[in-house]
Length: 89
Image (cartoon, rainbow, N blue to C red; front, side, top):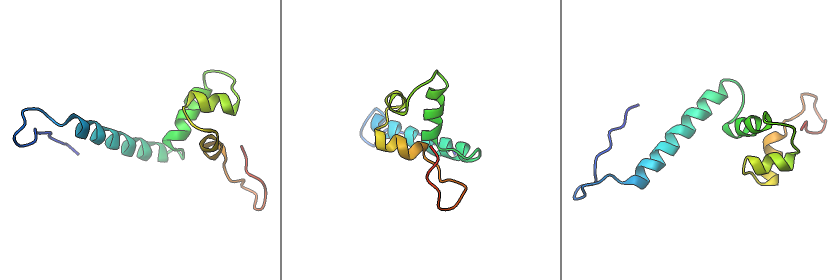
């Protein structure tokens, strides 16, 4: 998909906030699609990329990935392949 930005009528400059929002949306959409092919989300990739840097606790990884503790737990928790068993973290 190509996108040609043009200034708003009556202005000689582009709307920077629109361009940044659009770029963010396109990046998020493409990253989500690409990571879906290998079964992870962009957030999971972020945590894994930071985890590759050393040995960290979940709280340390959450700080590195700029996630709160609840989001970190939800990101790391996967349902167990065995029914009625606890989450695997």
